[in-house]
Image 1: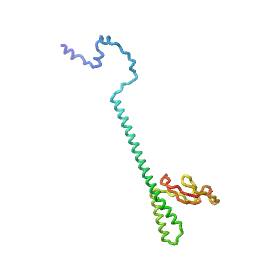
Image 2: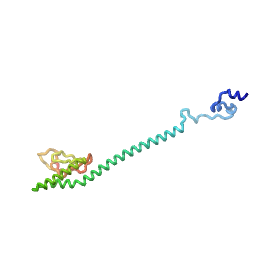
Image 3: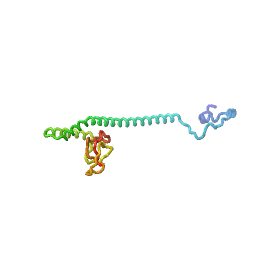
Amino acid sequence: MAKKEEQNQPETTQEEAVNTAPEAEAQEAPEIPEATETAETPEVNPFEEKYNAEHDSFLRLAAEFDNFRKRTVKEKEQSYGNGKADAIVKLLPIYDNLERALNQPTEDTAYKKGVELTMNELVKIFTGLGVEIFGSVGDSFDPNLHNAVMHTEDEGLGENVIAQVFQKGFKVGDKIVRFAMVQVAN
């Protein structure tokens, strides 16, 4: 019959079993003050803590990869721009020589026509590469673009106006490849 009584009684959980421990044992054990535990600290689940750490690590890794990708794209663009600027610098003496040849008086029209065609083709290539040629007589002097090597007083020209151009200036985008060498008036 004891088995029947046990079956009729509801099952007790472990918490209830701990709470229903014999009172004699509870009285014998000294009470420990709860000063070490604070009521405000929530219980931290170790799985949640590990998940948060892994999630944070993943976000940091993703951010580092994104920064790396942006940095490599920027470096690639800069290296292409620097390579293009270096190639243009190597072609500038050819441009200068063709310009000098065009400024020399000649009786041979075929020769002059050939030099003009060569110069026009070189300027077309520069334009295709995004090269801007600057520094013309009559432009206003800009120390960020022009290198003033001479100064002249001329009443016919205004203040800080380019009177003569010795070498044209070239820039690719915002990068100055060569400053214009000029004479400034007034």
